[in-house]
Image (cartoon, rainbow, N blue to C red; front, side):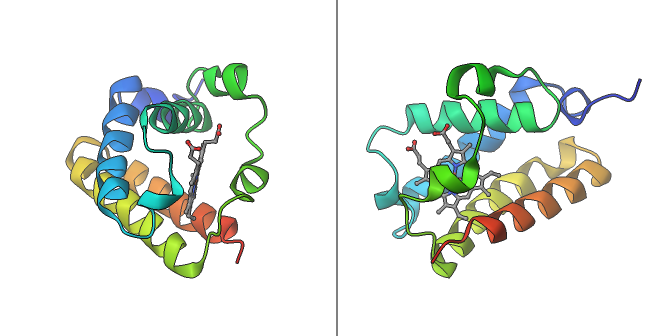
Length: 124
Ligand code: HEM
């Protein structure tokens, strides 16, 4: 059986570091910061669980939050081109910092995925 990306990157720790770095970017961004709740703890946890599940890890996101329905969950927020670019920049900055610890194939897969899904979630 083929190993999941979740296993290939070493499991939870990688996703926790990726999301931690991402939210450092969110916290510093003038467009993104006001879109998120003041306390980022739940946002952080939901994104870790979602990404771990997406990349083949335990299905804890679904247990906690139900079906992802990401487009619907982003409907309350004005995801403009600027917000999309800021989101992607924060994620890519965090992913780039972890690049040495994941293989180039996984790096490419993840950057393609984030680019594509951020594009799809733009709603304004
Ligand atoms: C395109 C720009 C994006 C913006 C501006 C954005 C913004 C947000 C905001 C404001 C929230 C609510 C946070 C909260 O209430 O805690 C959220 C939730 C979330 N976003 Fe995004 N997002 C974007 C793209 C993405 C992408 C590309 C993904 C996945 C790859 C994603 C995954 C999630 C998840 C999993 C949640 C939590 C959903 C839940 O409530 O269970 N977002 N996003």
